[in-house]
Length: 189
Image 1 (tube, helix red, strand yellow):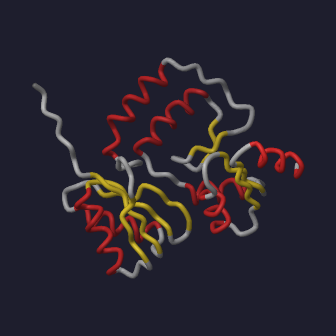
Image 2 (cartoon, helix red, strand yellow):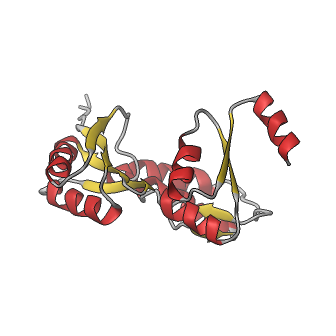
C-alpha cells in the first residue's frame, strides 16, 4: 500500500511592503524551506508562497519590518512557487496536445509582464506561470505604457479591477460579472 504524504503549504499577503522588501522577507524566512514572492499585486501588496512554516515566519518578519498587515490566506496550494512543479509538469503534458492559434491581439503574460504572440512561446509561458510569480503590477504598467486606458475584468469579483486602479489611477476598469454587465459594456463602447 502506498502512503501519501501531505506537506503543510501556505500563502500569505504582505501589505505595506514593496516587492524588494517582500523578497528579502521571503528569503530570510525560508530557512532551508521554500518561501517566495508569488504575486506582485500592487504597490504595497505582495503575496508569498511556500512551506507553511516558512510562510508563517515571513508573516512575523514582515510585521517586524513594518508591514501594515501580514495575513495567512485560505488557499488549497502554494501557487506560483517551485512547489507547484508537479502541476506545471501536468500542464506541460496537457498543453503539448493542444493547438494554440496566434492571438489576434497580443497576449500580456503575467509571468513576464510582456506581450507574447507566438503559439509556442504562449504554451511555454502558460506552463511557466504555474511556478512563476504573477507580475500583475508590472503587467498593468506595461499595458498602460502601451496605450491601454481601460481594463476589462471577466469573472467572479472585482479584485483585479481594484488593483489596477491602485497601480495606475488613470486607468479605467470595468468588471464583467454577467450578461447585464456585458450589455452595459457594449453601451459604453
